Length: 533
Image 1 (cartoon, rainbow, N blue to C red):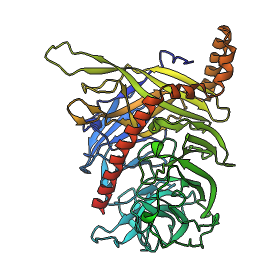
Image 2 (image 1 turned 120 degrees about the vertical axis):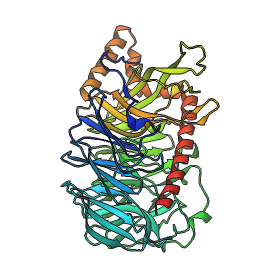
Image 3 (image 1 turned 90 degrees about the vertical axis):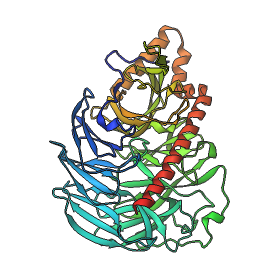
Image 4 (image 1 turned 180 degrees about the horizontal axis):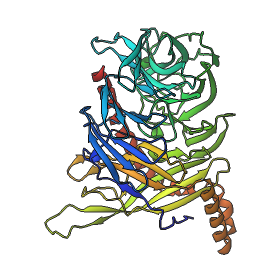
């Protein structure tokens, strides 16, 4: 059963802001109080958008530009006074009061420290070349953009990709190619290392995973998350048989993992893939095997070994781990599976702010409209509805809803698919838990034009815990009135998920499209990353 949204709870869209004119904005971030969204384009355009009515409040053109359509990292200081965005090989620091900005020449992954006065980044010496380029742990003053300190990071690890920082800010965690590792001959594989922020010293954690990608994200499975303060870093190791099996189940900061001289490229691939899930206590610098995973090629993510990022709830109590049967929602207290989400389009799943609900968003259903001008042969598409599924992870109860999506239009692009696939590149739940804000892009194939795309910002109505309870009670009352008591019982056993199996063929087709699109983006990011270095 689908519960309708009230008339005032419709999809809202912002597509006309200058930051979306290039077809694909770079990044977005919400203000500390949730009232404003800042959107950044790679051409240096900055847009300030009112989160309430989605109107453009202010725009500004910065000096930072980058000739690429890649998504990038954006953050905001704890007091909300400044927003920071990656634009190519520089950081753009924006004063949120007037959108004035300055450029900091930090070319690596960064994190804003908890006091909000400095940025810590892992940068590469741009004047050197080759795999032995020196990497530095840099601290920048946000106020004036000056370099406060610089420490060399040991040459043991190359191509560092920062994953998170510990809450005490004493340790950064990253993946990278270790010089004497069995992963050295495989450009997609890497070891997880801990970087001491006081000294730049590196500790190997004994876990091999994917290189040049985010292994853990918070909130939503979006394409480019930010480096965050995480008490626990959860990630999937390389599948068994493709990584070093000598790592111990618990490993302290002083321990070093043994390595196997056999190159990963010489080892056979597996279908299904299976491997271990690791949890790293970021303050303590200890790693522990907590569970196993298994995926098959048909639902693997855009990685060489089928590993997808682990999604952690904003309150750090639960996570989603990719499995062969879909996604397992797991308690991070005892690492038990709470529920499983069947396979489908994985680009639009995420947690509520409290971690007790999981949201899944369908594509936007559209209908073709025609221009009054007979000479205009290009059809336009207008949104009709968008499906939203909400699940209580503790009970497995679900509510499926169709929301009014008439605010969305295709801007005259003749899409072949009648269901518009808006892949999230950034998403966040509002402070009151009633809306999901998402910056989207699409690379849907169009007639005679190859692959193209558009981008924009969506404001999607969602259920908070009180609304979810009311919706469930409404479903039960409706079923009781119709005498369909069995429907009530069945709905407690993943009614909404059964809807996904009915459209399984479509879901598989969309999932394949997501994988193909993200593989292209992943390869382009690798190429861009190499160019930057």
